[in-house]
Image (cartoon, rainbow, N blue to C red; front, side, top):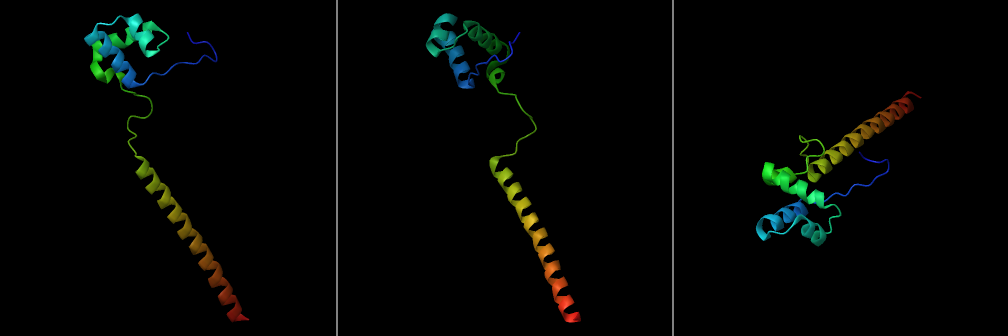
Length: 109
């Protein structure tokens, strides 16, 4: 169970794959892999090996966040710029109404 304020280490997918490779292909022990790669908990290596056996490389994919969200940085920028254009168009309409109202009021006088 996690302790309040406890920090968890996050290891990248590439490190996990390297750990599994060292175990499978080189025959290294879990302790040696942990020492070599700077992993504090050798049981972590054991978990990665088991996950790889059960699910292959897919087991290491990061599944955090919304899986349906595939919006790229470019699409976000286009959406932001479109919103900016819409705001400017609205502001222009407001300014034009103000100019139109002042022109007609000066004609009446």
